[in-house]
Image (cartoon, rainbow, N blue to C red; front, side, top):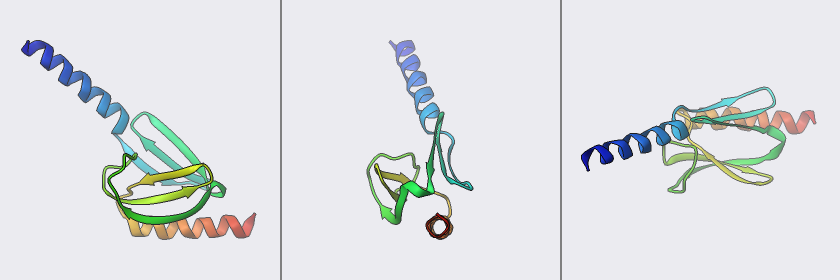
Length: 102
């Protein structure tokens, strides 16, 4: 029984690590890159309508409840960058640039 419990624990830990580690958010030239474990998603700035801070409990590719909500054309995305305020300010600047450029 203890061996089965150990194997189950290792299996759950492996899945958790593959889904959630590492968790990074990168502002690229054309959009935001969101990496949560093995999952990588890029969201073009043109698809992001606005960004707001949030203290939430919903599941998200984020390790913190101190999050940012990216309001996108096809739904919201929650992220938790380490320096939330600086990330939000830079993202808002890039969103403004993408609107004025395009």
